[in-house]
Length: 130
Figure 1 (tube, rainbow, N blue to C red):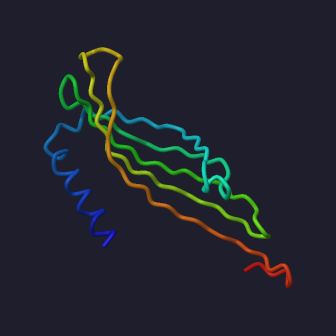
Figure 2 (cartoon, one colour; figure 1 turned 120 degrees about the vertical axis):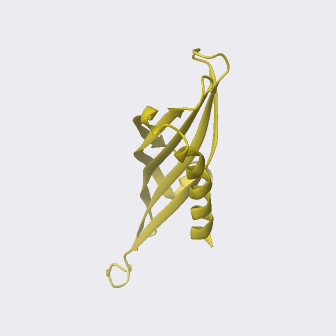
């Protein structure tokens, strides 16, 4: 079911883009620093990552953007175990300039995040990693 929903989102996002002139896409890369908070901060360390994105002007006030990234959180040791987490955020954004050509704009969008975690545990009685 999750794969079907992902496919529908990609189709609905791709159809309007296919009708546009994609030669105006400006590509960019970015770095990420993520500081976990709350209960997630009890088990995850600082996250580092980066991503790529593209922006394409739709008209003089609206620019469409898309980004995909990867953020890795180093785990903290807990009772002889080692945890690590990774996130892959995928975003579709719209940037609206209130006055064309100005530096003041609003940015909003939707996205989804795929998460992965790994857990390595060493048995304290046998010393074997499981």
